Image (cartoon, rainbow, N blue to C red; front, side, top):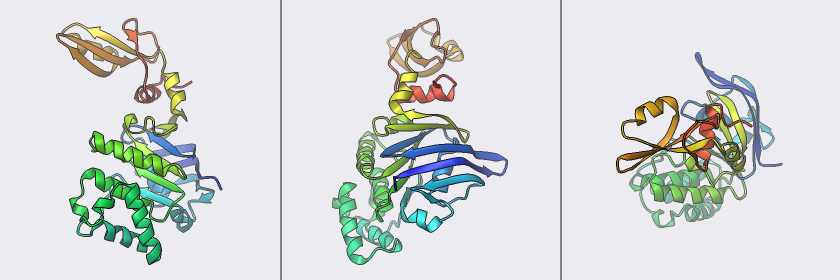
Length: 291
């Protein structure tokens, strides 16, 4: 059976708020990104797929197994939440062994998997360090390692790079890329930079609905001709921001250069700039990235 996730009309509400609104989507092969602003429904979707929440309506299957068979889904799924933490007083090796026991692994398998996964996560030198003394990046990598303990076919990761510095982000990207060589790794992220170059396929969510999907290259191609640079005189930035969606501003002495997107592709000023995945996602959310 292929490593894939299929959603059909998935819906989830919290009181009057609709977190997922009839979501239909197929995720398959390697690393797959779920992108969207805070509140888009990404975390809710991952928790449903991890069988920690139930959908109100619709269907979902993980590697062909319906979510109603929660035990079978958990056996083939690993999950790392955004707010992951572990037993602070335990040493890293002990924590991994304990979680392996909870997964039903025998002692020999736990020992072997712990060694393999700590090496994969570049934590083998921290095996006897207490969990509470790990840096934020180390703790997140330990989170990935524990989610892989039972060798799942699907790994669900929520905001893996949130709050990490540049070096730690690079370590996390390498770990997730390695994990995705033989399983489906679904990464939920608000910042497109956290998955660019890592996830060949992308889905963009907004208010629980699918706004765009395709390869990262396809989404970037749709953004061609819709990203611009404009040099602004002093004092003009505030008015410019009222007219255009500014992505960033770089100062050159008294001059400022604004990078902005325009869904029409015809802002009447500025010069075109090469789009990135973040630009493409922003245009999808603002109605200029479909195609």
